[in-house]
Length: 362
Image (cartoon, rainbow, N blue to C red):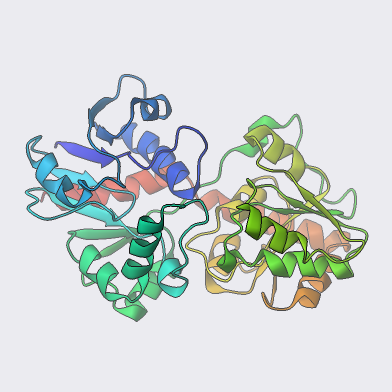
């Protein structure tokens, strides 16, 4: 079997969610079968297996992207897997699996804050303005991949694709390996609230910030890289008087682990998610989580692994945080979360993906 894996979404500078998913799944899959990686810059090889076979073509945002399948045909792959869906499929002569992580941008067509090119932003909005372009794109594949059962159910409810849908979930980084000892959640009531994620509107960081009005004894730690200046000042203006909010401006994995281990709670008021990777990362350490009451967070945290709140109610968020002063509750949530998170591993996801790949050649 000649299997190609589209690794052009790897960001060698720092990972976003797609980059980390691309990298981790690529490395896990390469342990189970021979893979040729499609890259767009040689720095990406530094995050792939040593001595990996590869070909180099244009980046995903190139004007050549609609011709990608025609370009790949000359290499005669049997199957191509893409961890996203931007690959052009016209003229393809191979089996293809495309990935849609969620329907977030159909619900919220706002382009990511780091896309500054006006033409790209307009094209983004045009693509996501209704469901039809995504439906046409996914139906051009043989199989559609996604990252959670909740996303799969959403695809089915929206008739997003007529093709079979498989689920290869994200998996957490092993942050526990970066710590001398795991946090003891029963020792002290938490006083640090951690948010890891983007500052785009659907992430709804506003509720966390406004909720600090009711939590004067707590500190909210915003770990991600700062948003563009206008969005940053908009969020800063929301901070209640006297509230403690720390902007970390991006953290290393080591710093991430240390902040989570420091008497912390992981929180998210997101309105839409395909998976929720920071949740499972916190749960590897047994750190309690306070999350939006929506299906995907119930799935990845487990019904007994988190406290859930109304994402539009800062007071409800604060009330759930305060419940974690109860030591017995913290220990119960921590134990359930650590048990549930064991179901997520890159090796398991790679096995599921390889089975789907193999099925296309039978």
